[in-house]
Image 1: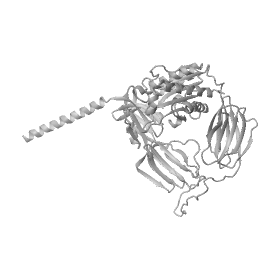
Image 2: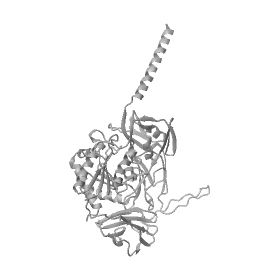
Image 3: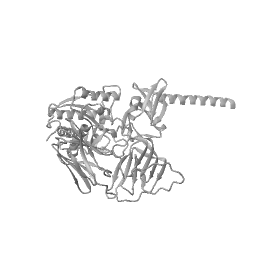
Image 4: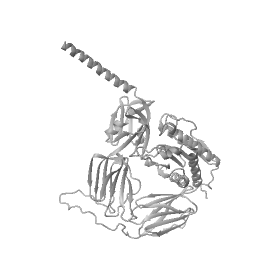
Length: 551
């Protein structure tokens, strides 16, 4: 009897085990596949993919946009990412070869989380593993690539603030800090490092590269690296000095590098050691551009007699703690400054008309479409909202006499892969020799509990005319736009290595407008109204007229 019960129990156990396995296989085989987005908050990149259960499946042709590489074969795919190489399984979803992204992220010491709210949005965050601060030199090590944003806080005794957006402190973080430094989880996805240095810091010039290991030296003097030995004397912290040292005086030189019908490029050489802090471009009058630099002892050297027909005069003056280089121009122009170790490049973008839009060929792209819905859901899907905005802007431009070409007028996509679909859109503008390319989108704040509100214009970094076009439109967003002005933004902030494909591949001035944030309650109240769309269209028309030289 006992033996019979034992055998029967064993058979029942085997049946239950087989049933559980069959159910698991069925669940995997029939798991719902849904369109989803992944937001790389530490890079500012958002990509489309598929949600299968709790996993995010990313198409291999999207991998390259993260700076990774992928090679597929009959047995899977070889992924090279963040300095590591992985052999992973692949899966076919809607005709695309995909790999499991969350599994990859975990292997690279990153964190991924599905955001609440039913948006099928995955957030990827980098983990800060160690921070070291010693006498003004900071070292940061992260699981995934990061790029710090550096700013000054305060005026009389400024502190250096390093923000690591899309990053979290690792539970096992290694901290090696001197008394000048504080490290905190400033926001849920923002690590902040504050340095209160006993000297005026030398801020890095230009855009910082993204990397897993970053070293920044804020010391104003060059440091000599040696191999320490036991007999080395102990290190002494730099003495406290006046926060605004007086450097030796010298001549500030203004030279013309190149000039074309579209722009004048100057280079301004600043006497050593230059300024300490941040130089800014300002426009006190319509035809005056000023470069305001923290005070330095300098006088204006010789300026070419015929510097440019577009520049009437150049002056240098001291103004309340600032050294100001002022240019009187023949008309309003775009002004783009790019710092370097010797000074800075200043490019003036010339207007190319009298402000009229009559006869101008303008290609309007309604972002996403078809199988690429973009962010949001339901009536707030980005592909629907962007098409409604594009049609409103088209009517406003045609009323000004512009020739408008739409990349799409229905809910459709043009290519099977998103990368090819984006290239097609810029090719429409290139084939038609367009004067301007405008792409309309709606934004998603990712993980922020209180999403930002407003409108921004994104341009391809390194193209001065594009930046000026974005600034012209945002100028009217600031003064009369239906939502707050979030400024003109370099696309490398979102896609570090290459910028946005739809802008990079356009051969004419091009911008991508993020009209509003679909997850912000305030934005959501207005984005479905014709009044909102007409408000954006009015700002676009006025901005284009300004770009084309309206007096």
